[in-house]
Length: 116
Image 1 (cartoon, rainbow, N blue to C red):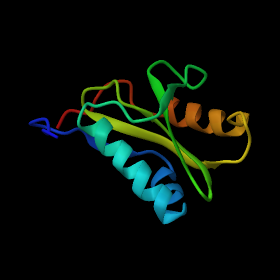
Image 2 (cartoon, rainbow, N blue to C red; image 1 turned 135 degrees about the vertical axis):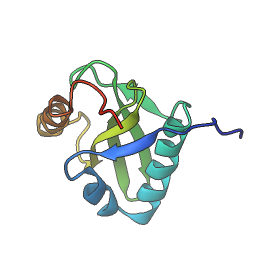
Image 3 (spheres, rainbow, N blue to C red; image 1 turned 90 degrees about the horizontal axis):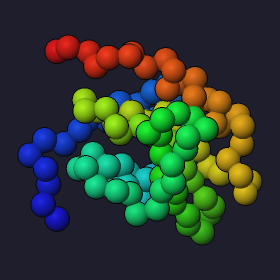
Image 4 (tube, rainbow, N blue to C red; image 1 turned 90 degrees about the vertical axis):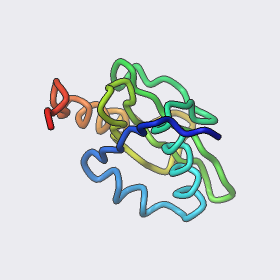
């Protein structure tokens, strides 16, 4: 795989990084690999759009023997991939609580990219 000249950085919003680290190691490895793909400008292996959270928001979906896991993120901004929420999925449908948390974190992002 050829890597882009500049990979996007990952910005962990709220407790999303700690939430990821609390998941089983296999889920952390798989979600981390999928986020790396996103950083490189590629599609994750399994994802779906999350318009209920906001425009351009997507959900990475991974599954292993211990369950189903999700990372909700925004990658449409040029400066970074924003990870809004990481969690173990416990029901068929993403819970309203998880959607609302991701939406609040999205709404808390600065409107424009910081100048650096």
